[in-house]
Structures are given as C-alpha cells and as structure tokens.
Image 1: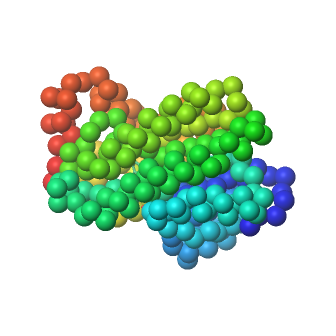
Image 2: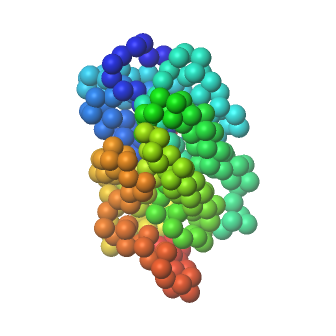
Length: 264
Ligand SMILES: NC(=O)c1ccc[n+]([C@@H]2O[C@H](COP(=O)([O-])OP(=O)(O)OC[C@H]3O[C@@H](n4cnc5c(N)ncnc54)[C@H](OP(=O)(O)O)[C@@H]3O)[C@@H](O)[C@H]2O)c1
C-alpha cells in the first residue's frame, strides 16, 4: 500500500485498459499518486511502471469486482492500511449484446455486480471519509446508454441508467460538503469494450458514419470536468445530441433510432 506522500491519492477501478488506464495516466500527469485495480495483473503492472515514470507512486491491487462482497473487501483493505483517498474513480464495467431472453444469466449477474453493486459499495465505503475531511472527488463512468433504454443491450443500458441516476442524486446531496461527484458519459470509444461486449459488429461500433473517440480524449474531458466539480459530462458533440434526444423525443422515435445503432 502507499506510504505517506504529499501528493493527492486516487483509486481507479478498471485501470488495466481503455478509459480507466487513461484516467490513471491523466491523474498521474496532474500530480496524483494512483492505486490501480482490475483483474489482469500484467497490464496493471505495466501501467504502474509507466505511471512511475510520470512521477507518481503507483500501487497495483488485482481484484475481481464482479464477485459479491469484493468491493467492500477492497475498501476494508484500504482502510486497514490507513489509506485516505482524495479521488475515487468508479470506471470498471462491461456490456453484453443480444436479446435479454437469450442473455447468459451468470453474465447478467456479473454485470449487475460490477456495473452497479461494486460501484455503489465502494462509493458508500469511501465517500464518508471524504465528507469528514471536507475534501474529495468522485467519478462514476456511465455512458450515453444511460439516457434511453437500449433494446439488444437492455441490461447494460439499464445498469448505466442506474449509474447516472445514483451519481446525479449523490452529487446534489454532496453540495457544500467539499466533495463532488461527476458522472462521465462517453459514447462509442475505441477500447476493449466492444470486443468484450460482443458489440464490434453493431453499427454503433462498425459504421464509419458514427464517430468514435479515443480513450485518451474521453479521460481528458472526464478529468477536467471532475476537477471543476461538474455533476455530469457527456463527451463529444454527437454524444451530447444523442443524450439530449433520449430525453426529449418520444420512444416512438427513440426506439427505431436505437435499432439503427444497436440492431445487428
Ligand atoms: N468503450 C465505450 O464505447 C464505452 C462507452 C460508454 C461507456 N463505457 C464505459 O467505460 C468504462 C470503461 O470501459 P472501457 O471502454 O475502457 O473498456 P475496457 O477497455 O474493456 O475496460 C474495462 C475495464 O474494466 C475492468 N473490468 C472488467 N471486468 C472486471 C471485473 N470483473 N473486476 C474488475 N475489473 C473489471 C477491465 O479490467 P480486467 O479485464 O483486467 O478486469 C478493464 O480495466 C466501462 O464502465 C464502460 O461501460 C465505455
């Protein structure tokens, strides 16, 4: 675990690839020490080495956060070591493509545990200490999928609707405490997500007409918004339009549009 340091300390979940790796880089570049966690140790070790070249102390904790109780275990491990976090980034998550009735039940359970239960438990365990110290930044990584139901990716979109709803509500509760919560809502982004979720063939990822951002650009926008204490940031103009449409247009327009992006 981290020895005492005058640099602020951040925990990033899902830091072994994609947006989480780039958020860890962003934090290290901006003077933070970083605890990085995910399941894949080699990727985390390689990132830790890179973060140290940026002047950060980097600690690796390998953990499968889809196991019930794992997030609370992680929080207890940090507390036992006397770790006081300045930044908590709840980024780990995955999706799943296909009709709900054909979805693998174990995969649904793992997704609910990771995308919802672990994020909630970790935040519940860590936020009170931040409030007591009157200092802290929390980030939830949701998605523009949070803004409308997504047939053919129903469970994933519903998990992200939960993340957005919980995050926006807690952000309000935290006003005036010195602690802020920012929900980062990316759209399609070049990471391991599409392959892991079986989404590579969906127009959302395969069509050249739909713009994709890099994980570095998403992380940079997320970091800036978090430092400013913004409750929500949607990355990219096109994604802002999609999220806005999900809120203002009737479902009779939203579902055919969703089918164009999420239908195979
Ligand atoms: N890419 C997109 O288009 C997109 C769009 C909107 C939102 N998002 C969200 O962005 C976040 C990051 O995803 P990404 O796009 O960067 O995809 P990614 O490259 O696949 O990264 C996912 C991260 O989550 C970790 N993870 C997965 N299962 C885990 C488990 N059981 N326990 C602990 N960690 C686990 C992975 O690490 P290990 O495999 O090593 O465990 C990895 O570090 C996710 O919440 C995703 O829903 C992505």
